[in-house]
Amino acid sequence: MSTQPRKLNLPHITLRLGSSFVLALVVLCVSPAFAVNKDMVQLQTQVQQLQDAVARLQQSNDERMGVMKDLVQQSADSINKMAAGVATLQRQMQTQQEAQTGKIDQVSGQIQALNDSLDEVKARMGRLEKLMQDVQSQQQSMNANPQAAPPSGASGAPLPATSAPDTAPPATQPQPTPPTGRKGKPPAGTPLSSPPMSSAEPAPPAAPPADELYKTALGDYMSAKYSLAASEFSDVTKFYPDNPLAGNSFYYQAEIDYRAARHAAAIKNYDKVLEQYPDSNKVPVSHLHKGQALIALKQNDAGVRELRTLIQRFPNAPEAMQARSKLSGMGITVTPRR
Image (cartoon, rainbow, N blue to C red; front, side, top):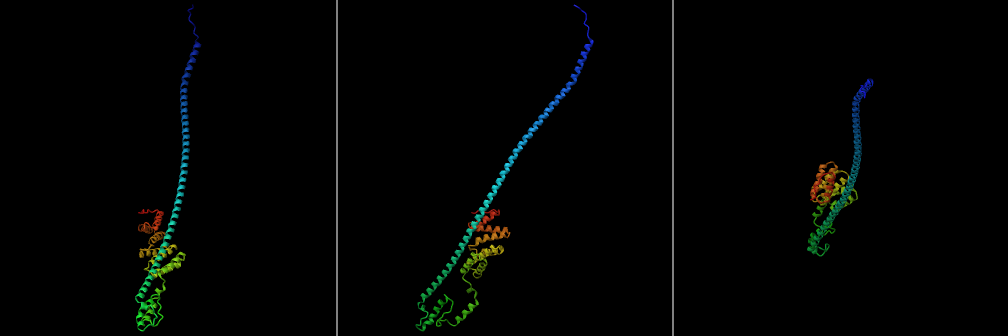
């Protein structure tokens, strides 16, 4: 066995050491670069994830916004439909209210016509009652003096002196013309005093009776002859101011002015009915039309007070129903009917 030492190949060793050193240096230089690239990759990955999350969030928001837009559109359509339905209901209610008001006006007019007819019948009954009383008084006078029945008897001389005073009143009551017979003529002073009385007061005999004049005026009013009817109603109030028909005449004069849009003149005549004829059956309708005339003149406060007065005084009258409808249409609270 040989014990000689082995000869070392120094260049080869040197080359290997040099290459190892270079490799170590390369490894040492490349390791940080790999770490930096890894962090960059991770950062890029995170950024990409964030971008994807933002995109998904935006897509979700877009979808939600689309849903919200659909809901808003549906809500707007529903609101529009509701508004159209409410408008339709309002028109229907207004139409029904106008129809009801027209019916109430028609019924009120019919009631007024019935009241007028009743007034006319009452006036005729009064005339008939007066005529019956006159006939009864004549019959009683004739029954009390049976000898005074034959006015032209010539039975004796003493009778004309006693029968003249009895026969004179029945002859003058039915007709104011003087008697034809000269034997039964009263003393000379009586015929001389009657002509001055008839000539001094021509107006009362010239005017027709109140009921006939009122009936004629009412007929002209119903025939829409308002100018003629106003003149005739004025005659009733002029010649018969104490007659109950005068209150109706003032009312119809006010109605004629009201129809012609002369509201101020109508209010004056309505006031005459309310103040001078408080028991007239035209008082409720006078309150109603006076209030409407005041509202037409833009005097709303006074008109509302007048309508409230009507409701308080006559709560169950048809005119009170019209007053409530008018106030409700103006948006004014109406006291409930008791």
